[in-house]
Length: 230
Image 1 (cartoon, rainbow, N blue to C red):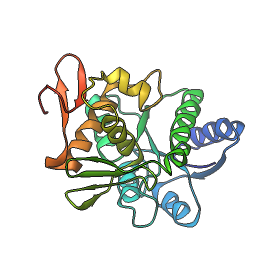
Image 2 (image 1 turned 45 degrees about the vertical axis):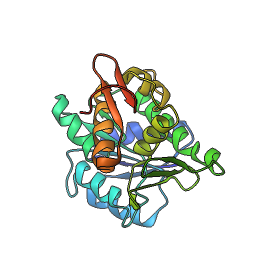
Image 3 (image 1 turned 120 degrees about the vertical axis):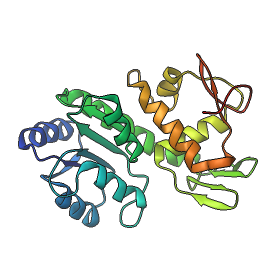
Image 4 (image 1 turned 180 degrees about the vertical axis):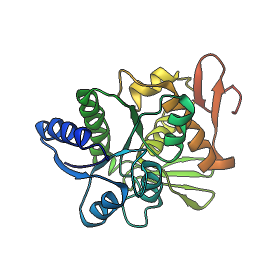
């Protein structure tokens, strides 16, 4: 698998590269966002790790550019690196389309584990190639093509948003805590609950009036069933 790492700190680039190469990945390294974009345009990249604060395109801009799907596959998994510890700053990164974030200073082994988890999830997609279309009201989810149509219009979801919607649609009426969703959708035994909160928020916004995600206060979320919309 080819992983792109973009960070203006040469020490971070070197350490991250060595750990990921040890896991068998091909690593492309970029010292700034503009160089990262050039590498993305000219190489097939399975996952991107980008620092939020770097010269040229910063990590948030790079993330948004990827998610447009104009040049790079919009579903490319993205991990943002940030030295900002406040929850609001982390949420901004997730709202920009990132699948995950890691706060600096971080353990390079933790980064390698997060990369492996996202790549496993992306590789699992071919298993659903022959699965039937899932319909719920005006929503159509096509597992094979990993596409979603709502109200007759295509909805551009990230890979993680697609996985979350697929999970909800195949477990309707069941209440899942944020920890449950981290474990069953993200395949993580650890992680920040705000990751789930932001992805639910983004999914609701993209599906607009077609979503049926309910908040069951004190317990979690469900698709349909009793509860309040947030």
